[in-house]
Amino acid sequence: AFIWLLESKEYLYAAYSYCEVSDQTQHTGQMIKEARIKAGLTQKELGERIGVSVSAITKLENRKSAPAVSTLERVAKAIGKKLEINFV
Image (tube, rainbow, N blue to C red; front, side):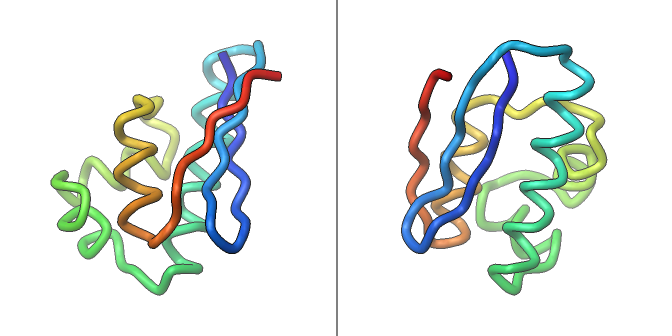
């Protein structure tokens, strides 16, 4: 499964399609980083808001681990968005 994160005014969208896992983690990590920066948060602040360490945020952003849906939900909430998932 591939996760595309798209941001609107109110929502952080996650759309799933099929592809290689390495592509999934690369794109998702970059989108998490962009959303965090856009929200004006440091890695430490985002980590504190979602209950993980700075190193866990670094791993997510640097494509070292693919996030679970529950993690995406916590990220969306931490940056003031809602998560919507679509299968495409």
